[in-house]
Length: 349
Length: 69
View 1 (tube, helix red, strand yellow):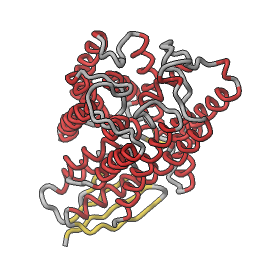
View 2 (cartoon, chains in turn green, blue):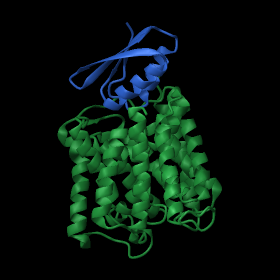
View 3 (cartoon, helix red, strand yellow):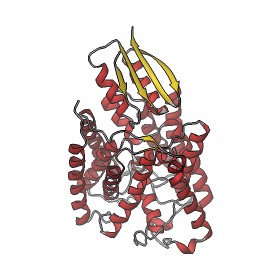
View 4 (cartoon, chains in turn green, red):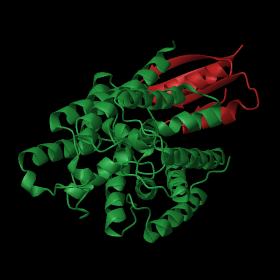
């Protein structure tokens, strides 16, 4: 097997197993990992929004950022870089978050939901692929967010330091934060295990350059299928794991933290796919790049935190009962924003 | 010799630029990148299109020399 395929498939399998373990140890159903949901919970724990059911400092995200940082430092790939249209990336991140919280999950959780038998996530996958396809048309048409340049070590370390401090504070002074007493935010694996798994997964994703968007995008643009193997590895591993544990339930209805509105599941993930292609990677990849010292990715992650707060403060996020009218308007606005950002960031070929 | 300067660009842009540059079937091309992931992606793409790739590293930047036999 090619070395790259080995790392990609290994990472996919480890993510799948880790997700099953985290769910068994207390994380919400089909939510061993979810970059969007976990950033949303962390945003809520910091009281940036006050949706009582989704407030918790998720150690997995913090572990992933720090894991990517540690491994990239060991391999000398930690390179502080930034300055590639940071504010545009911030806005794109907000748009991606609006799409993710319409669907109720980032692309990674979409894969885990498919692995749990949630057929709504298959509808989301079709939307995701459609969105990625539209994004690749913009890339072919000369879309670029311009170059990043070398930055200081301080700039590269800023987000990793912030999340490390957040982790320590939330563990030692929990009274500073809001923690859900019921709902998805109250469902979580033990802190140290979640943090440890996050560190390992973050480190592996850094090595493999794991990205849920890249698999489909590179297959469409360059006929490069290597990352797609990782995508499939996550889904196959979670299907097998859930079957073994008797947690595989094939249906549209009654899935954990999910709704059955097909049109908006499709459109939500289409927005995520398209927006992520313009950002150069999925939410997971942004978290990993932020750990590697890329401050554009750090700004993107900050945009996710801000976007999650907006989604809950203005009633844009869906719930198990379905999408909201505000959320539908925001998704449509998101598509308009992507078109405008696309139009204003083209270079002549 | 033609040079594609993809330094500072996030993936997949270095590969998109390389793809655009090799479309007319040119035999030689130099691609400049400054990230390990970009180096790997451009190398993989070039190999899939039948180019031999040699890499020179200077101060964290990579110069990829693509040659078609």
